[in-house]
Length: 302
Image (cartoon, rainbow, N blue to C red):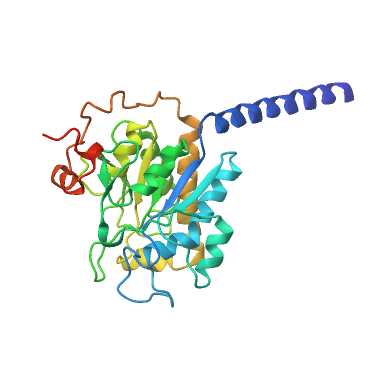
């Protein structure tokens, strides 16, 4: 009897070790998961009309507080994870402490005024915030998720469409997985959403908001998604997200969605084969590309 139990324990431990080795190999196959905090200090993005539960919900500030929660979910599952922000590090507390604790890498190139720049790797892709996409490409990221909150205006509203934006070729699986996790764990499960679920929206033309970064990542074979699932001017969402338990659950659901994607992703990734041939959406900012006077950004324009 004791001999049988020892054999079973050895088999079980061997199986767990093999599973761990497989997961480690998958984790090492690509680069780290990159999480990018939307906007930057001094350019906060969306902001709630007024304080709720003693706190004014601001997009960039929220993710400085909770991006580390998403990161911990991913790290516990065995994947490397990096948090970036395209601005300078916050200097006031408690945001400065949150940034240090989460290990945020400050890319220190805020795009004040929404200034659009070309990607250094795919110069015909032009958009604001391109520095974050370029960092993910440089790191050969396994995937990148841009962490944002949404808004339908500057007054309290009843709702909006919870959506995950993604790139055309590589991002659907990632976006779908995040949507499912949010639907199963948060939306209409503590976070009132009028019975609506989260949906996936593919962005293909560079002129569309966020599509410039998404397409640049697509060209390098990187699944990319933008979280726009919560609304700072939806009072029900604001009340949920200004409570630590609610905000933590929201961040954890995003982490679970990313991990579920990483565990199931077996699809070969699309990579742009020829930089000199136009690809999906690459003429979106034709006039702006000419104005930028960047040779690479102009080379496909007639």
